[in-house]
Amino acid sequence: MISIDKSYDRPWNEGQVLQIGSESARGNQPDAPAWTLLECFAEVKNPWLTLRGERWRDDRERKLDYWRVEKADSLIVLPQQGDRLLLPHPIFRPGIGRATWDFPGGRLTDLAKVELTLAEILHRELEVPPHAIAEITPLNDGGWAVNSSFSNQKLYGYWARIDGDFRLSPKAIGAEFQVPSQLVDLLRILDCLQCRALLREWQQINTLFT
Image 1 (cartoon, rainbow, N blue to C red):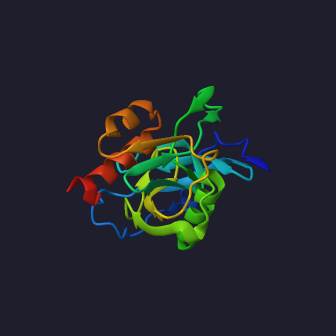
Image 2 (cartoon, helix red, strand yellow):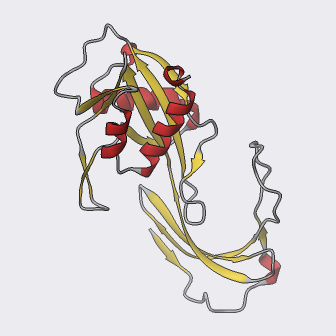
Image 3 (cartoon, one colour):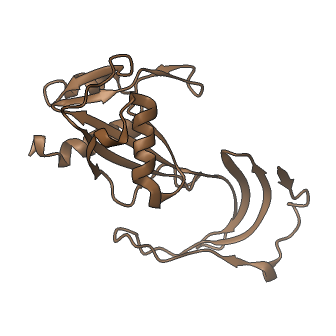
């Protein structure tokens, strides 16, 4: 579905200004003036995302055009069994034209169902059933903005401990890294910035490193 306002060069209608802004529950938000959304002059929708062309007035009264994407949040899981972090097999990434090593992950369409989504991801990518997940811990409460000027998407990261008695499927596991001794080797193969950031967060808070 494509909706484009072909008269987007017309003067802005000041009588139809829409105020955007809400109080954040997070305590680290800067006290800065909110911008004002004047209009949306283009919209492209598909099942994966919505692309919007918008005209804003900033806190210095400048009128600026921005393109941004609305899409589901991302969930990345760092699965661990014993002293080993587990990775699925590399997956081809069309954006860079090659396969990469990544932690299991997927779209998070409902934050209230994060545990269910996490279990589905581990079952799909590592063949780990829900009953084998012994413990989960959030790595970044509230999520991180992925690209705040272009997208509303947030990244949520979780650490998942796999029951030590569960027998992993050798065909489903792409790589295992003993921690902390092989942490440097793991970082060496991870190209994904989001995976690397969550791994560093995990390193900071995991009891293995305290």
